[in-house]
Image (cartoon, rainbow, N blue to C red):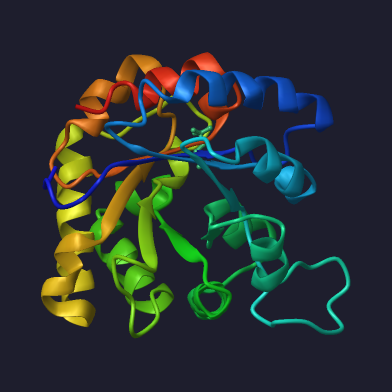
Length: 251
Ligand code: PGA
């Protein structure tokens, strides 16, 4: 891990969390001081909890993010939320192009790219997710598929101040399976190389997170891999003790 890139440990709560989850979030805040020296901390709760969590987190090291945004600023898009609304509710980051969005909502690279641009317009940092399916990995296409997703999903003008990339192999999400450290390192190096085509030397400062079944017991190994600048954590981010243990694995 380059010393110029401060690790980011991000929790993606997905469609989990009622208002009473504020108690678990309070426990995260209470335990965050000890781990925040080594890493930036981020929780992306469902949008219904954003404003309350943002108020709760004030003055703490935990930043808030959203899990998706619409590409437009406002308008006739029933049920959608704009990046401006999410920023207004207290988000500083927004995840775009998570594989569950790509699969459940048919989001293309072009859609993801438009959402990342919308995030920037609202002053949010976009966490652009990429990752291959099991079939693509077994066919030996993982590097090429992910390189194509990066080229298609990351807008022009990206920088370390506006962009985080998350590599999340689809087959590792929620399954307990993780790639080998060698495969993670090869993929992160490829992502950084492709970012360099677009950003030149600026690509060195962009944080690339690993996501997919990150747990306290594999965090040291995964976070210690070269070019891994943090983690995007799903299931294990719902419990303060697990999330903080993962953040504590940053060296
Ligand atoms: P998981 O999810 O940690 O539950 O595998 C990761 C993600 O989808 O961001």
